[in-house]
Image 1: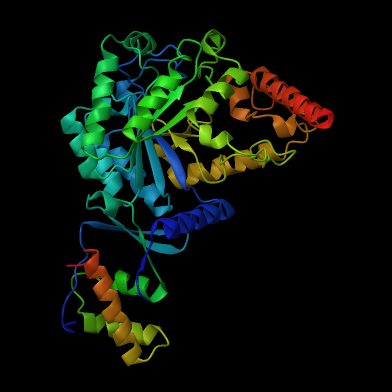
Image 2: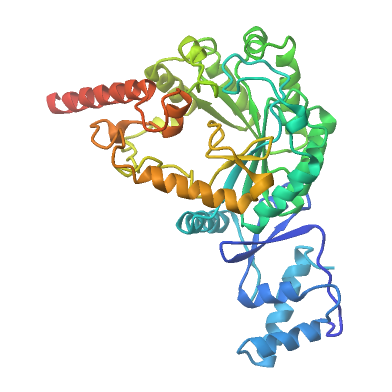
Length: 93
Length: 361
């Protein structure tokens, strides 16, 4: 994870908020991908909301540290894991 | 914090939760969107009275605006239908916009216009399911039912194109006296293709209250049941308990109307559901949210009616009556339907026979 890296949401993913849940739906068209949807927990949903193609990962983390009751090393690990997942489903570029 | 991958089981559970929450909160969840009344078939049993006013139809921009509003309201699934939706020149643009907006997208079509190119487009756009009406395996009967010569060949080819392009699709039939012997053959065709096949035994009266075709084409409930046993034998194996009615006595609407569903016409009107041309709230003038709130109030008022016609009926639990059916029969919402009453009486007699046999042997 490069801390100064700026993330951009992929056009191949649609994100929705339905009944209080933030969900990601892949739009790329292999048969398997379409049958999946992904849900984000509260922190991940806020991370996703803050990804705007301008803020760096570090900046986003700074905002999360202010907004959530979480220690920096724990957040680091969680963000690392989330990024791995988001990149895995081609949600960010 | 980690993102959760919804496998098939998790996804099903998650979607059920979303659906239940939408019912509790009375948010629209799954809606139907008629895009045109124009049709290239002339099925005699169609519930649409025919004729379309092209000039009144929503423009692409207006459809997009409605989709944006539906997205904001948290609608999950949209079923696009017609008339024949594929007759709209901007249909792929609309389906693409809906898919990219994050809706689950269904398309109900007669399939006539699906060639290899169209099937590829549907795949690329990411349409989740295509429902094809397929009423017979005999070209002669099929063409008689569509009113278009050569339609069987075209639609059968469409099915193969969808299969080839790996588009998820289902086949559907209405069971009628003219095609009842065809149903097992269509079922076999669907099984060979490995696709879901469903049958519907209810021919709806036309929206203009014309019931001529209902009488002419309907088959008896028992006959439909016989066909169901052929089409879905797995549902009739073992000692399955009879399904319980979830209807609330005294409540007129027991479906999703006014709870989490509605339908939109090609002219931008909001209706209770697809089958009923009521109450025609003007979305272009008032916006989707405002029309939805009005519908909820109307349904609530109907559900509170003290003179509800079925309130004390002893057939209530066995009856498939819906207020919409009474409405399209031309008697208003609060009226008994002879069609459903007859079916409920048949069901009651069957249950009585069953009970008698059980006691006797």
